[in-house]
Image 1 (cartoon, rainbow, N blue to C red):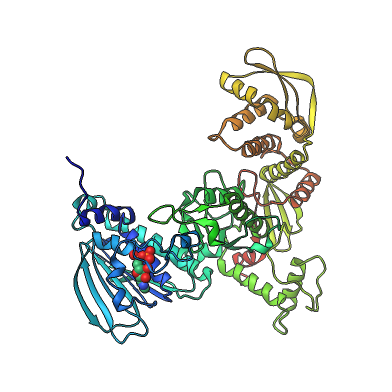
Image 2: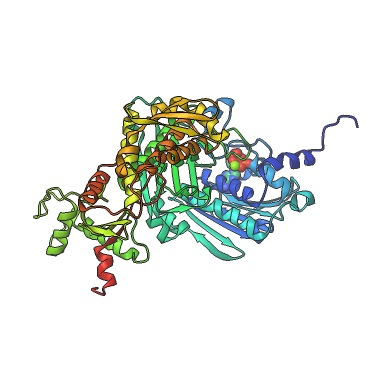
Length: 596
Ligand code: ADP
Ligand code: MG
């Protein structure tokens, strides 16, 4: 065939393919236009998963009558005017492709009116051609209706999934935009039924309640890092805001991790990685957190013109963004994660009441406090609070651990302790693991892991696989306290090990077993980062060295364990993310015993 230029309509359909993949893509483009138009309220109506109909109605600025047709031309936009503007984009749209693309693959009707027009414009476009135009009165704003997606493209239509699946994509999208713009009202209906609605209060937490439900939203804590709050040396100023789940809230997939960059929903591996690293050792292996994080930075420092669907961005300084996210999330987790409650007993209202009471006391409200409330509050806000209420500190979740008094041991596995806020059960193994882990990390950071020379070197014959790992990691292992020499073939001489392996548990650790485990950890994961590998090895050493379940502890030993756990920075989980303790509050006890 000779080369020829394709007919305009064919070219339009090809180009549209990059922008419109499925109904949710249409919803996305229309929503972005409404947001760019400054709408305070956006109504989204969907029929048959969006295949039949998608209608987005907003009360934004509207399109002037003499520009309506132009809006459908490819590369027609009111948002940028030259190439310089590309370097600093503040709107969601800028490519001028969306309406043109949508009109190439659906039948579009637009009804729009600006605030200063007496009459609005109605226009119908099918297969990229205007088929009808009339003046018609309308409220200020724009209503775009897109019907029969891919009706003229059977090949494309075949790839659409069931209504339910397409609907799920739309739901995910609309809820994301609602979270990104909590100050705007979003109303979503499917087949005439209202399925999602926000009130536009401006508070992200209100939207979280609508998206995730009260129970989950309650387990989310606020993240806030303003650019000024950084260490000053940062070249890029990055603000990080949002909500993250406490470590007890986790999911099997990463679907509930949401990032916005300057108001744009983006899917970005680097950002996800920063978040996951911040949760390192806090979540059970293989689980993912729930998080909604908004990143704001100078639009000149991020390129959004990467893909026609605009769901990817490129940062000029990705490391600075990575660090900002990781630091903000980690700090929030360290400061605020509450100890998990005994869930079958916990009733959310009790926690709320506790918090309300605390707030009351913190605010110094007069007259309403009972003596016991005060006494409890004083205990909790120790060290020395003024009982008169003059300088009681404002309510805060306990930063680290409350002071605990050991009562005894249960099932040779759990330490039972009393604190100001009720009963605590500590998993002795998990708690000890955490203690040793932080001790060893600190030693490592100071490059002084304490190593103990063995009276008699240990001969270790390894399977070929592990022998290779041993060889490859010899120097790292040496830095972590393992002095190992090759002894021909797959045999090695172990001359020294980290002191905790011989000191803890009365020297009862099986060193051969411990070392094989360490080597297996070093091998696990796909090309883990050096630091990650190191932490894994350290965690493995600590796991071997920590007291086991089934070991009887003396009162003194338990007290020492609690004291050491109090000194850690992340006392609430073991390095593998299991909880070190659970909490049964006074309120829960009272509830269980029918005292209220
Ligand atoms: P882009 O958003 O990239 O500019 P679009 O094809 O999505 O391109 O829209 C083209 C133009 O139509 C926009 O630049 C804007 O001026 C106008 N427009 C589209 N939708 C709306 C709307 N809901 N309200 C006001 N103006 C709109
Ligand atoms: Mg647009």
